[in-house]
Picture 1 (cartoon, rainbow, N blue to C red):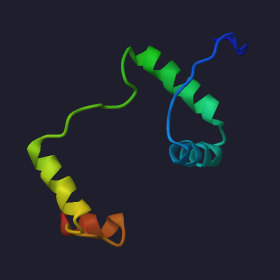
Picture 2 (spheres, one colour; picture 1 turned 135 degrees about the horizontal axis):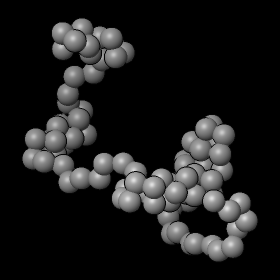
Picture 3 (cartoon, one colour; picture 1 turned 180 degrees about the vertical axis):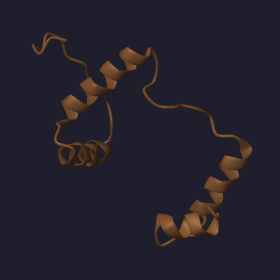
Length: 87
């Protein structure tokens, strides 16, 4: 892969999303541009989205709405969840 930049893309997004993503990727040791290049490189390598993109089913939508409304069970840590699930 060439390290020389020979083209540009433009992406429209909110300032808030750009700032949040920049902070996240900075913590990971990369710039927003490097993160986008990584995403695109991985998409090409996998010949598709580098993550599972899907439309949630009715059960998942119901669960999302429940959590957004303040419902659902909250756990202090993963271990507490695993214990309740008997995992």
